[in-house]
Length: 555
Image (cartoon, rainbow, N blue to C red):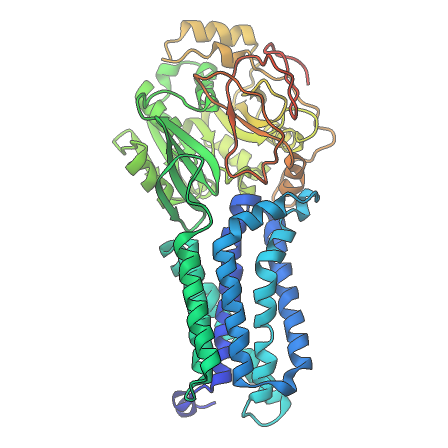
């Protein structure tokens, strides 16, 4: 097609419908990741389910549409568009409940998200599959090959526009419901345009009805009360859903529905989550805390650790936080203030370590989404890079979410094995007395050390760190068995497979200053809020988690 032909080209109504179907199908596919992630995470299995369902539904739609193509008309395509828009309204209104219902199905972890994706996005994608064969049947092009090629080129261009616009503009700007509403309106508008210039009463009335249904679905939502507390702030970032929620005097940062950080509004310096206290253990392992100059946190969240280090020690704190919206929320709602001693770098942690020429006395890895650490931050190559960026007596700490032993411990044991491969000496600490999925702190030293609990307890007593770590020292774990797990490398890092064993177990986040409650049977893939318990030794018999003595034991 020459430039003159291109500028003079005016698409027909069926061609416009193909373009819109491409935009909405790919836009919904990108949006599906955001809708599914808070419930199931954003692992390769989640995205595999999304891609599989969308391709299968489109293929089935193409096949059925091709079989019925001889009945194709603009009016039929109009009804298909309206039907798709109506289902989008259902997705907007009922996605949370549908996700909960689908996630309750007893399926292996890797297939857990498949029913949810199928129920939410299979029907509308199937309907959109009819559009292309219908448009090819109605095409004014000569020959089947030219007609089909033209139609599928338009559909692909629409898919490119839908993917790009949703990824780079809509998700960073609008909420999920508003994006769904926009796609619904585009479908309704296209359906209405297909009936013009003759205004047919039934399609026109249906268009108005579906438009009103979309507005109502987006306007009222299925839930008027959030049991987690008062929503202070909510946004869709380029990477995740971010929420700030107040429950009494406690303010919590939720990322993709999982709690990441918390702050006591009355006592901002108090550690609400117990695991953040363990970030200070490296200060017991360095030769002299007074000589610690530079500290790096990879992952910011609510910036509990970085703020605490800046407040307690005379050090320079760098933070590598990939998501700028997380940092903005921390500044607006968690009292983060950058200063000469605390600098935030909006950058991937591994890239920051690779590019910096600074060495650090302490590096803390606290980057994860929901229950998943970014794979490139789990690999041996990253651990070796971290080791190279440490001073001679530097200490590395990784916050690992896993069970300390038994079912659900595969990822912890593989991560321990990987860190131990890169560092001369490795230690680990449990943060909960329940033998369930929890925050396990893996600490490694660049120097060859052999710290005993007694030595660390003595240092804790003699060093004025501004925090008593005696209870944390008592949670030392024995070296785990790692013969059945791999070292995680760039070539082979089956993190999703290793973490699959945690599905169906309670993720226990210990919380300071409260009485302990017994974990209830739950799956980390089902609940948006994960109940918190505190450190005292449990007096009740656990249902889903096995309590262990507070004294260190071999596991």
